[in-house]
Length: 405
Image (cartoon, rainbow, N blue to C red; front, side, top):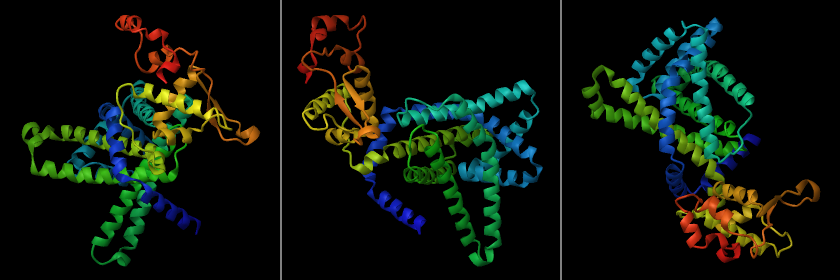
């Protein structure tokens, strides 16, 4: 009953997501966070790391001969579910060929391959933490341990899961129906949920911050649905417009694979951005139009609000209160608050353990006496040789915080 209640609550939460606003947010995040450029970088790293990752997985299965059957099931599923059918067989053949040769390398060669695989993992770690605006990643040793376990045990557990699913569905073929349609549908649904679950786990555990499972699953389902649609679109394009085959001939698989990896990473990064901004979207935060100097303007608005709140009983405002008043989400607000705290203009008080009061931000700076220059340098106009004349002739160094307020 508890699981049913949780599922109902999750469905209610999905219904609360303003999907039209979410699409606008994703478009902004794609531009501001340069997710297209990040996807290009991940495409290059993934291309280099594919063979090392396959080699490590093969080494795991080789170490446990009893799981040899799982290896075939896993390879077939990964290619069929993550790569368009047009190039799936060629990609599988190339990867097996390269991985077979790589397994014959010496210790130094294998160390380089392992380092390449970890480079991809750390790039993913850094990218997702940037999307969630995480400033402090996990300790290096902890990250290595987690990702090494994922690289080695992940393929094994996934292969066992797929083999058990295949066996169960095959055994129940008579119950599903005499024709293969029902069984095929069940396999497709299982494949869809496995991809969604893998993405949800990625969004839940990789960022060094608290991500709710419900939000991670929404992002995972978004990615899984996007990959399915992209697969069909790319397969249709390749079939109807055989440009790559005409130009590249037998080499056409490589550019198609690169395009597909890039598209897949764009979808994954958009899913991560959606997951990161879901709390703000569900809370109903109004989207702000971002212009040059918007962080400087937001910082001044924060000081205004905290100066006004200094007359109240609490003498400050919590993060959620600031975001609601200024109609901005927490991921955009937090970097500005960090700058103000670093300047000692505001302070973050957390007295919950002592007095049972909610954590809040309070104003420390006196607007009548505080110079505006430090904030302008950090968020608006850096002071260097090219801007020195502007600072002097404009008298910007003499401005007080009150002048801007």
